[in-house]
Image 1: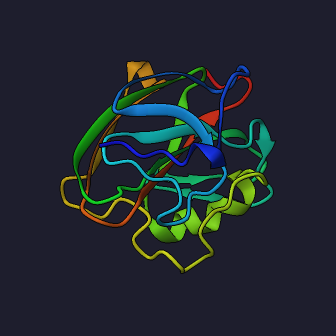
Image 2: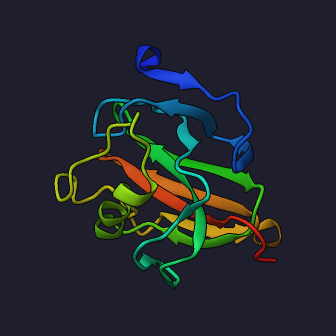
Length: 172
């Protein structure tokens, strides 16, 4: 069973940092990624957030810190099952190299202001303590020469969020 609240979403049509998706990933811009607002038992969403923004502060990622002054583009992955999504996986290809991934709840909260879109409702800081990857079965791997992300999610009841930070400009 799949249930999308399509009245609260817009399909993406403009060129962006995400070039394509495979498997259980839908390329869709929701208006709300808070718990129980944009749900599916069979798919998760990927969408571009702010592009080519200059960081005014350091940005903490799973792989270290991206320094203030760096120009980055942000993309977001959102999974929120209606009942239980036992396992989902997907691949997302980006137009620039991945320089960081954010999968911890506190770091997602801290990066919403710099990366998030004003048209999307994000969880208030601290409201969803399990919004990041929390299951021992959740995992991701940077693939495709640093321009792709392969992700596997086990989402029993809460939502899972991941933010991907890519280079903007000359960083090859």
